[in-house]
Amino acid sequence: MSEETLGTTTVTQVAIVVRDIEAKSAAWAGMLGVPVPTIIVTDGYDLARTEYNGEPSHARAKLAFFNLGQVSLELIEPIDGPSTWLDQLNGHGESLHHIAFGVKGMQERLAFLAGKGAPLIQRGEYTGGRYAYVDSTEQFGAVIELLEND
Image 1 (spheres, helix red, strand yellow):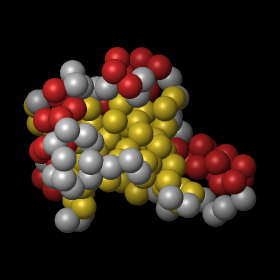
Image 2 (image 1 turned 45 degrees about the vertical axis):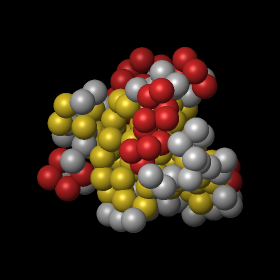
Image 3 (image 1 turned 180 degrees about the vertical axis):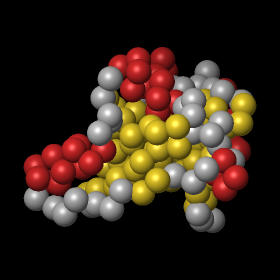
Image 4 (image 1 turned 90 degrees about the vertical axis):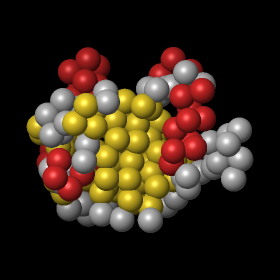
C-alpha cells in the first residue's frame, strides 16, 4: 500500500450532524422510502477511548445509518462531551460533517494526511475497528473520516 496516497478511492460514508436524530431519521426514511434505522448510542470513554484535540473526551452521540448501496448515510446527534460533532453543530447548524473512507494502515494514512496539512481532530474505537477524523476542510472542503476494521 502506497504511503503517497490515501490508499483508496472508495467513499463508504457521508455523515450529517443533526439536533434531533429521531425526527431527521424519520424524514430521511420517508423521503427514501426505506425503514427508519435503529438508533444506536456510541460507547463511553471506557470502551471507545475517544480523544478530541489530543485529549481524552467523554464524547458520545446517537447514530443512525442508512445503507444506500456502496455508501451509507450516517446521521449524528451529539449527546455528551466535547467533540468535532458538537463543534460542527454549534458552528454550522445541521450540516455535512464528514466523508469517510475505509482504510488499512490507519497510522500511515493519518501521517499522509498530516503531511497534507490535515491534522487529526478526533479518534476513537468501536466494536471491530477504529475511526479518525482529520480537519481537511481547507485542503479538500470537508472533514475526512478514516475507518479501519479489524
